[in-house]
Amino acid sequence: METTLTPAPAAPAPTSLKNTPMLKLLDIEKVYQTDTIETVALNRVNLTINKGEFVSIMGPSGCGKSTLLSLMGLLDEPTGGVIEIDGRAVTSYSDKELARVRNHKIGFIFQSFHLINDLSVLDNVELPLLYRAGMSSKERRQRAQQALERVGLSARTRHFPSQLSGGQRQRVAIARALAGAPEIILADEPTGNLDSVMGDEIMDLLLSLNREQGTTVVMVTHDENMAHKTERLIRFFDGSQVS
Ligand SMILES: Nc1ncnc2c1ncn2[C@@H]1O[C@H](COP(=O)(O)OP(=O)(O)O)[C@@H](O)[C@H]1O
Ligand SMILES: [Mg+2]
Image (tube, rainbow, N blue to C red; front, side, top):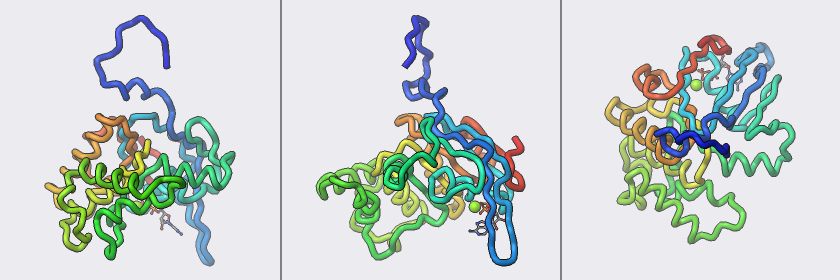
């Protein structure tokens, strides 16, 4: 990207991208309006996530963390401000382009895994790929198998979620996110339902995806230890960033 004669830093290749913004939130506001009450979930948030970064977000319950991730993942729209992905305002994307960005660029991981209990592990991982136009069933299967291998679950492809431990279920959910080869993973308290051993396993997996593949990760967590393993920690309080 840049031409320079100075020696490259010792850091791995993905690091060179770290000054390139992936996601930009400019003066973001989110107000939820119900019949009786108006809730300001986010209040003028300004935040840039660069390519290849691993950022954690902490803050008390109800301070807007999940709202922030759902806006970053284009699952919901802000009531004010601008979101940019790859330098382009989200509002300038057509619905079709938005659906494509959601499906190709972004992978979600949730606290409660969100697996479908009636589907095998392999079918769960393949599911988001069904929305990829032109992808053959063979390629879907291959990608799903590779993703399950990546999370160490190749031996469990025919199992059902109920036959797995919590940590294994979360690894299936990560494989489901990975199968689409996303550039950014948004993880909402991914270790919140796991004991500390399983939680550490999931954290190590996210760290290695970030380091080895350069995947950008934004993770909401209540765990200070995990947050301190990431490059940047952002603290939220009452809808705003405080540090
Ligand atoms: N769909 C919704 N409708 C109305 N209020 C909501 C909705 N989602 C979240 N809220 C409110 O917005 C605030 C922020 O919620 P949330 O983003 O889930 O916080 P956190 O993830 O930090 O616990 C809370 O006061 C919550 O009650
Ligand atoms: Mg939340």
